[in-house]
Image 1 (cartoon, rainbow, N blue to C red):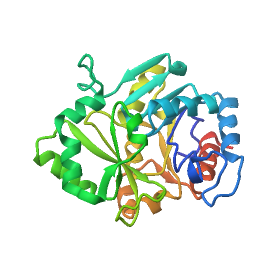
Image 2: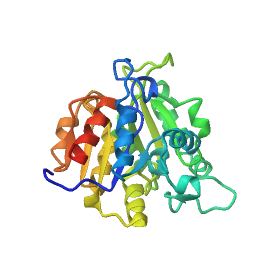
Image 3: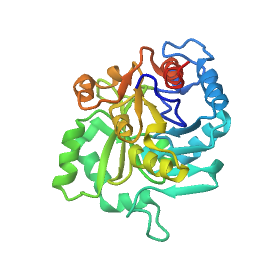
Image 4: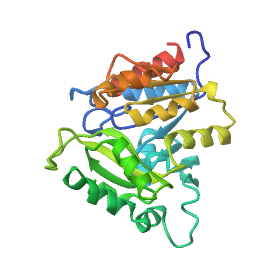
Length: 276
């Protein structure tokens, strides 16, 4: 990775990566104010690097995030949909879901019964992530803390082979009162959907090779981006989000864990990627 040319594209997660405490661009992980995130965005613009948000947030929220931060494209709902050209192009990444007229992907997933079965199976350890879940059209957003492998086995054993549950990392507990030791955000998505496949689609449409792209993230789910880019930079807080991260990283040759957490880590990753 040393001596590599600066990337033409950077894909970045938001919460816990580009954004600091409370989902703010201007707060560090400890809560202090900082401008390093905005400066990193400016550096990408000056270096003519295409920036693309890659988040579990809804289309509506990401549209506003992109507008405020001057970004032209974004991947929403954990890779379910790709938006380009300031929203002029919206591409479903959920095939074969999303092809039934009059039904959203969210509604199609609900029809399968999988969300209800998962909630029944895991009881008080899993719940819809209200009120943000009501804003989703492609995935079912939940919160709690469960064993992802167990949930995957449950879905497969009950015939839900066209769907999967992804862990989008640790989220802040804002008094939800759930009986779990830490809170995670989960998405029920179509099997094809994901940050990795959405990045691959965007690179093809942009005429950019994998070797000309890097990504930034903070969760085990973000590791799927590593297969589509030259280098994946994980924030220092990624280790806090996943106790088995060290073992998972043994399977990857192109993942770098930066020294700083959250927004400061993103700034560090951009500087490394651009050779500054």
